[in-house]
Image (cartoon, rainbow, N blue to C red):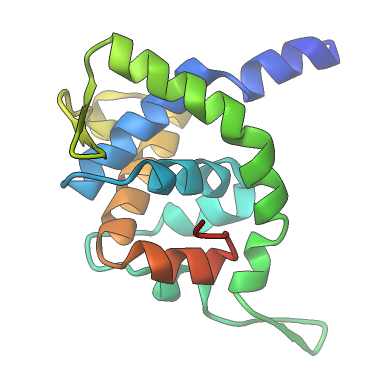
Length: 162
């Protein structure tokens, strides 16, 4: 498979729109656009997705990503496992914008008072295989994000809030 074909599969705004729809379904309330842009780089990163597989309605960002792991007598924090986040955030921004356009044109989201509201929820359990795993991770990331503030997430992830 050529590098261009791999890019088409991994940087697909249609797939990102499905992830965003599930994220918003889990978030469950009007959501700031920036939170969607913050979610996709976490979902794309394999190590963070592996943590989200175990997420449930009681999970919080700290419980998922803050625990320490010992590797050869060195402690590595959970936050370090999100390394490269800022680079992924910047690189994925154009695809996230396209995904928002797709969701809006399919009338799955609406913009109200400078927030995004999901108008057609997606249920992750209606999918099969790997798509079900990805959409479940997106749903529970939405649940996790709904329990904290944008400022806290921005600080935790190192994203500039301006």
